[in-house]
Amino acid sequence: MPLPVPVYFSPEYVLARHEFDTTRKAQWVHESLVAAPIAGIEVRAPEPLTAAELGEVHDPEYVEAVRSGEPRELAESQGFTWDPALWTMVRASNGGAVAAARAALTGGGAGSLSSGLHHARRRHGAGSCTFNGLALAARAALQAGAGAVLVLDLDAHCGGGTHSLLAEDPRVWHTDVSVDDYDAYEPSERWTLDLVRRADDYLPTVEGRLAELERAAPRFSLCIYNAGMDLHERSGDGALTGITAEVLATRERLVFESCRRRGIAVAFVLAGGYISATLDRAELVALHRLTLAAACG
Image (cartoon, rainbow, N blue to C red):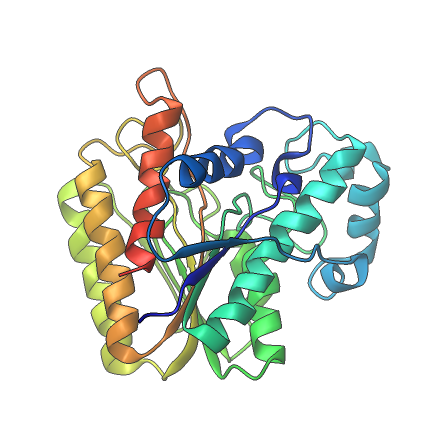
């Protein structure tokens, strides 16, 4: 019998008073798992990260600003109105990303209902991302003995924050297929960036990059997967006409099947995906459940 896939969540993921999909949808997805469980998913509560652990990736002065709210401009640099619960929220949600990476290394697969990660820089937040859980998870995996780590970023927007934090580490590779040039960066051999403008090109680009990794890259110990749904054609931000739920379901199968073929552990987080006038909460949750279902095979 396959091992259960641990998926990390705590009510602390949604404590901040700032109302936005990034600060609320983890609860919506968790509620859906209670109402309609996905076979193989086992929800667990993570340990929140400490200030010292956050300081391994982020500047301690920035970490302290998020904790204390001062200076306020720095504490709100991700775009959220600060309140004391923000500190609790981001320690928990980033702790979930780290816990998923560690659990995946031992069990083969894990996830966290975290989002709002890949734009955060060392000294400030950006684009609804306070701390960079992808970079924190990669560092934790390397400290736990992982060899090469792949960050696979399929959010609608580019992962420039992750690039700024990890690009100089030769043990980390990054494959980024985006549809919006927000937070773009200069690609390199280990840090590829594709900007797709036509829906017909999207799946071939993802599949091509996965095939290249299978042929040429080192044997990865872990894939940290930033599973964005914001490129859905009716998402409130990042939408690309022609990207449907069916396209995204196929993408999820491609990602997890590629990793299974090579025996690569996967730690996933939710990433972008936003309600709009034509995409309601239930539909957004259904999109994120595609990742959870694919993770269970």
